[in-house]
Length: 254
Image 1 (cartoon, helix red, strand yellow):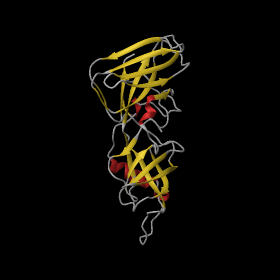
Image 2 (cartoon, helix red, strand yellow; image 1 turned 90 degrees about the vertical axis):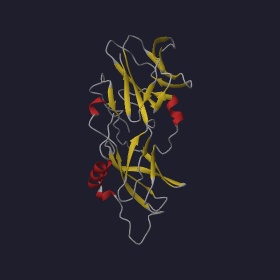
Image 3 (cartoon, rainbow, N blue to C red; image 1 turned 30 degrees about the vertical axis):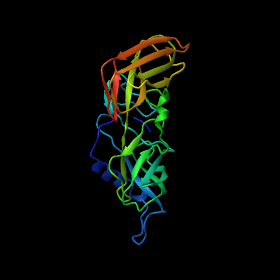
Image 4 (tube, rainbow, N blue to C red; image 1 turned 180 degrees about the vertical axis):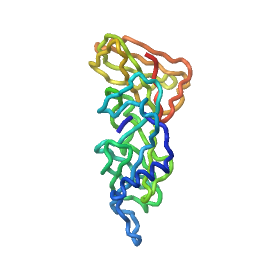
């Protein structure tokens, strides 16, 4: 799942999602607790009115790749899994409806009583995946954009996820055949490498998106662009502090 977003009131999202997925939510008998039972939960992703500034789904095309501002709009993909957490217990739920939209349903065995739970996407998220990413035209790859609940979900109301990571967008032109783009945080020397072997630059700007953890980079950042033969063909430096806000995208000028 992937795309760019500002936040609509979660209550409106939940109400809309519930109305569209009433038949997807398994009724729980009043005499029984949902713990250990297979249930289907209504799942929303926070979205907004700025989608024209976002990368489209990873399989789609961006109608406005030159845009430099925006928020992240995400949609569910087939096979998506979330981790539902109740205290020390957790269980993996799998997407059972709503692929291609920001409102879907997930099915699994509830680890607790369902009165309150938290959710993380993807179920196996590990920040180490950000160290080496693969170029996707007008978007970014699966499993990179961590999302989580900001308020606990319930069996009846479902849950709403918001993106925890941010995006750096780079608009590149030239005549080189690229190999990789390396983003470095000088404050901690961490690097985020976008593998784009064989991607050809032209005189028309092409967008490259790198997913980064949200937070302030006190010493700015450095971007090194390498050709296919590992020769450095470009460098971009931001010496002052840079703030990457969760669920937002920052695009650098061409």
